[in-house]
Image (cartoon, rainbow, N blue to C red; front, side, top):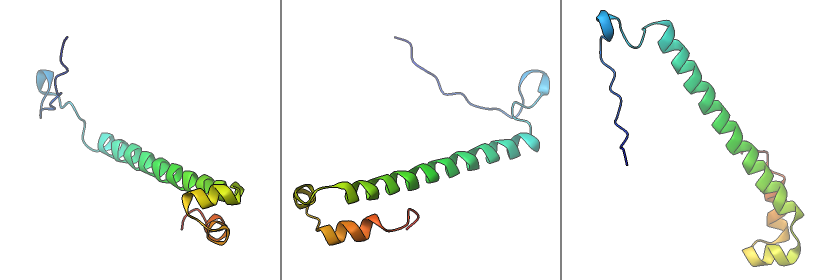
Length: 83
């Protein structure tokens, strides 16, 4: 089985040209990273909201199994997703 080797970027590639262009390429890379970070944050917030709504739909027996009172579940379920 073959192994995957790590790719190392150098200052100059073939014929002295840079492998990573400076300026615009760096900006685009940062923009993509920032967009990805924003999407992960939004995904976590939506998952939190779904979890809180699921608490509101649980029966008293289910809440008792996880050790939460109906009042606690109601208070948690009504919190905003960013909180």
